Length: 318
Ligand SMILES: NC(=O)c1ccc[n+]([C@@H]2O[C@H](COP(=O)([O-])OP(=O)(O)OC[C@H]3O[C@@H](n4cnc5c(N)ncnc54)[C@H](OP(=O)(O)O)[C@@H]3O)[C@@H](O)[C@H]2O)c1
Image (cartoon, rainbow, N blue to C red; front, side, top):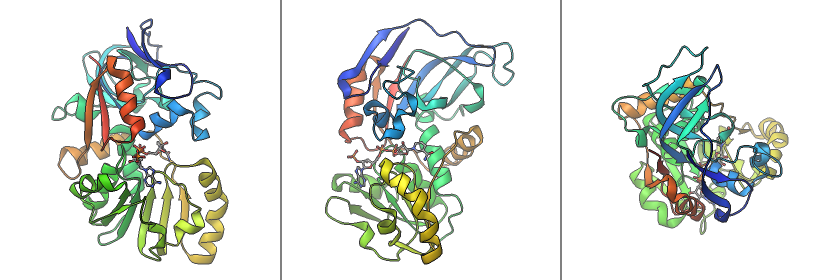
């Protein structure tokens, strides 16, 4: 079968498309013929091996050379102990370990997979898993009228964070590059901030929640923009900010009444089903940037690394 191979960390030059042996499912796995895959910010990080948490997939080189973690496809075989899915069923979900999906066939645990709703195409369904899990957690507990700031809103995950926050009645300020402002307003943001010319941390005591998809400022500085009782959630970003947040969170809370936390988003079928139901009934929508074929792997990763994508990059596999 054909697969995208990234056997070391680096630029898009390390990406190739090769023939590799077809995988064979273990007793507790399903074999999926992949119809579509999609890319996230984590795939850009896993390509570069930076921030350093991306090296959890292998310190010197990726243990699994096949990148990508969001898949949609058809079950073609199931191991002896698998009871949830049978051959012929259409499924989608995330791969554990955030790698392995840019291939014609994939073996994986059925635990993270959900049945694809008939009303969604493979390309639409595959845009949901990682971004949807992040958005569901990051917006959990928001109340009508609350003010939310989403930093790094124009990439893979931002659309669903904006959509779910709006669905819950919050108002959204979206931060990204100036040329993504129209895209962010179309997604439902009330206001946009160009991070290259304006500093959102100068908005003192304004937001009830800040969702930071690309944290790079000190948590002390970022928390200034929260109202008392508000919460700053770091989803991804520089390793030093994530580490600083773990130590700064408790003192910031004691002294200011503001919560500052790294948001851990466990991969989960129930989250995937919950967010998919909201998309299927029109409460939130996905943003698809462009669709490529598996053999266009270089162009696909160049688009991801350029940051020109507005929303999710999709790869049609078969
Ligand atoms: N916490 C968890 O459990 C968990 C689970 C899964 C994933 N993650 C993490 O979640 C993050 C997900 O992000 P994503 O997929 O939405 O990423 P993404 O597609 O890379 O989007 C990030 C956006 O931020 C913009 N940006 C770049 N520099 C910025 C700055 N200084 N200020 C504001 N915006 C800036 C980017 O623009 P340009 O591209 O134009 O630079 C891009 O539009 C990743 O870091 C991933 O590792 C966390």
